[in-house]
Length: 183
Image (cartoon, rainbow, N blue to C red):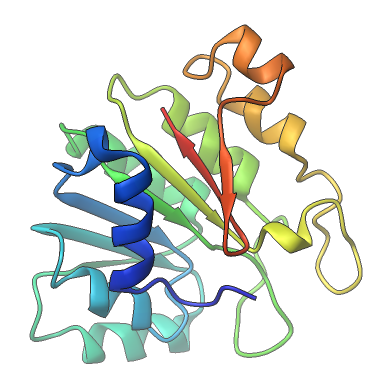
């Protein structure tokens, strides 16, 4: 289980994809206890985090009040259409929004990942996508991840991930329970 993203994780990913190391914008979905965003605020000039739960959003706003992080409240699939046009440069997306039984809010779907990816794929930038909880792909034990498969992820990103990369599954790597997709 990967959990929150830390400095070593980002450094490992950027070492693997050095052409993305100059990105200075970080966007997280699924703030939870704001651990990832707090850490990333020290590494990226611009940070955004999106949380659906009222309680977790309020806690994050308080925890991040002395940082430059911008906290957004709502369903990430609903916030992205307003937020993404404002981000006019490449970004690192850490996608971790999903319902879980403990301390979270349930949106229209348990895992809004495919909707998030569809919106990210429309951006004209070479973004980096980091999807947390790879081990849950295709499962439906607690939350319904049954539609979340490698094929569906790559299909949502098809405007950015070439045909042959999708067919031969060359357009991503898995590191520490995370699917990394450079666009």
